[in-house]
Image 1: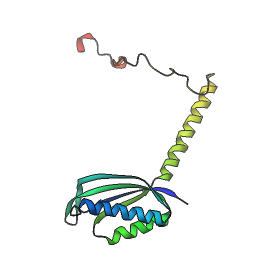
Image 2 (image 1 turned 90 degrees about the horizontal axis):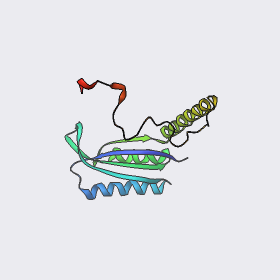
Image 3 (image 1 turned 60 degrees about the horizontal axis):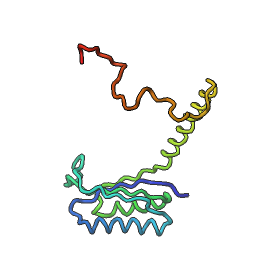
Image 4 (image 1 turned 135 degrees about the vertical axis):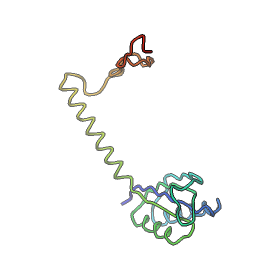
Length: 150
């Protein structure tokens, strides 16, 4: 069963851009061999580390969003543990978080619809409903200070 994962890794500052690209190519090759896909890759560039790792004070951060199996992520994790180029990496499963967000959003909209129907309103908001005053009016009347305090 395929799941969505975010893989963030920090590459040693001693590594060249070609080595960072080669590392991405290796991850892509492992993903393809094991039936996964890379949905997105972001190279965040060279940044200062929050704390010193070994002798390193900065590193190149890379984010990969991978759609694949747990076995795929175990293999990538194993490969990153034996290479000297990657000084830290983290794998987070994000599909479960997204499903919780979707369930919460659905539950809230169902409650809102029931409340609206109980008040005699249509279940869904109508265009223009719920706006307070003129949207271009940036004055906040709730905190009126009076003429002498402006």
